Structure formats: C-alpha cells, structure tokens
Image 1 (cartoon, rainbow, N blue to C red):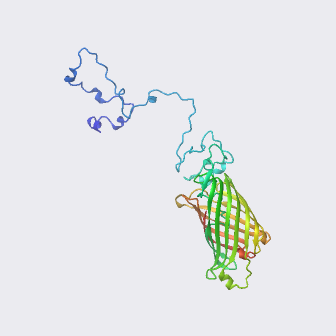
Image 2 (cartoon, helix red, strand yellow):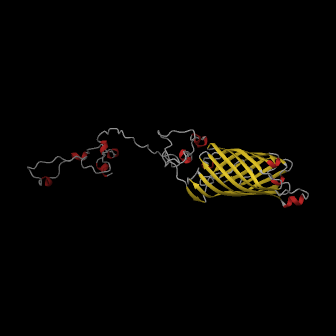
Length: 391
C-alpha cells in the first residue's frame, strides 16, 4: 500500500505478477554527492544488479518457469481428486475411476440408481468384492460390533424389531399388532469399515409379538415370544446364517376368561435354521430359509420354509428425505399341511447417518394362517398401516 501511494501508476495486479522485473524506482536520480565521493574515481563501476537477481520475496519464480520442461516418459500416479462426502478416487482401496481399473460383472451391481447423485454414495472399495485382494482390509476380531451383518427380513412378520401396526382383521375388527425386540452383535471376525462390513459374526436377538383387540377394550388376545442366536457370514453380494431359536405362544388372560372353552395349544418350537441371501444390486435382497424343529409341542411340526424379496435403498437419507421400500415374504409350515401365509409391505423409509438402523412407515397386507401361533389353524386376512424400526 505504501508503494501504491508513492507511485500510483503501479497497480496492485503488477505487484503480484512474477514476470515483473523492473519498477519505476530503478530510474530514480543518482545517490547524493556525499555518497558518490566515497567511491574511487578510477574504480570500475559494477553493473547494477537487476531486481530479478536479488529476488527474495514469495513472488520469486521457480526454476521450471524459466525453461520449458520436456514431458517425462515416466508414468505418474493418478491424481486423487476430492469427491462429495470427503472421499477421493483413491481413498485407501483401489482407484474406482482409473484407466487400470476394469469393472467386472461382479462389481457392476454397485451402480444402483439410488447411489447416483447421493453425497453419501458408495464405491467398489466400500464392498471390496475381490475377496482377500491386496486392497482389501485385513480381517480382525471385534467385540460388540456396532453393525449387524445379516439384517432382518423387511417382509418377515416375526422378525426382531420395534413395530406398531393398526390393522383390520376380517371377522374380528380392528386390532393392534405390536413387535418389541432387537438384534445386536456379540463378536465379529471381519472388516471394520463404517458400513458394508464382511466376515463372520455372532449375534443375539429376541422379541415379543402381542396382539391387542380394539373391540374388546384393547385386551391381549395372544402373544408370541421368540429368541435366537445366529452365526452369520457376509461376503460381497452373498450372505448366510446358521441359527438356533426358540418360540412359544401364549393366550391372553382376558381372552381365556371370555372364552373358557377355547382349546389352548401351548405351541412351542426349538429350531435350527439354515438360510442365505443374495444381492443382485445393493438395494435388493433375495433370501430363503429352511427351518427344522428338533423339539415341538402344541401341534407344531418340524419343517418351516421361508423365502422372499426386499427392496430397500442402502443410501443414507439426505436431509430427512425418505426413499420408497417394498418387501414380500412367504412362510410355508408343515403343521398346516404345508400351507402358510404371504405378507406384503410397502411405503417410505429413512436410513440413519450415525447408525445404519432403518425406520419405515407404510401399508401391510397379510393373508394366510394366523400370525399368532395360538390360533394356528385359523385363516386370517388383515390390512393396515404400520411403523417399523429395524436393526
């Protein structure tokens, strides 16, 4: 600013141009005579050093600007460009956008429509689909992991979650179907990423499924209790589980008092389940279970079979915006002559930022043998509106 005030012809842009090598003050009058007299009359005056030779300011030009550098034949590493969400093309895994990176059919499933334009999208590195490659994270032991590898079936009517469903049951009237439970990890041997982890994991879960009757002043008609311990495995698009669970069904006290002649079944099953799932895209899961009970009571038979499809976008809900979901589940039971029921749910979902839990709101339709196993031999059809919180 001092220079500008003294010499207004100098612009601020000139002060920041590296190519500037002279200023008007080089043409100032010579020094005062008292200074000149100190010089030897016969001494040869050295040429005045140019401003460029004594350049010591941050504007000093680096050497590569003086001469044109020949292009190097040595291949340079790809430049890591910033992506939304703080990621880069080379973020510790293999570069997702690189000339050396060839997308395989197994990795193309990651290009889900829900990930396009989402600032919390995912890349091939998040899933690490190439097995134990050099770019995959090492597997390690994790006590009480935050994430569940094998999540509940969204269309399963008897999965551990928090849920509330107001429905109309043909022949009965309005009912209130509740689910109170949860699922948690105990021990994992696998990756430790924030999302989309792989490996082996031991879980525990439990839930109660009461039915309240609006017609009878919210009396408890029946309640089922279910607990389980699964060992699960997830790798890329595939997952599997080996699970033990116990389920027992009980009638409500008020129901028994009002229906003294009702045949109480005391339904019970202790079962071993072998199940698996496949993700053709990250948002879609196809699954199937085979369930064999080694201990039964109250009319239960050994074999149950379950299968279905879930559609649920895996991307985090930005600014609270919901995304649609849909799921259908079918359960076949030996004790009702290999009949069963079909459950369909659809609506909107919200997926959390800090924890990969899922909140859903939507409609439910069920047709088949009663969901309450105390009413095992009764056919029912219900439809209503529900809220579900899944782990």
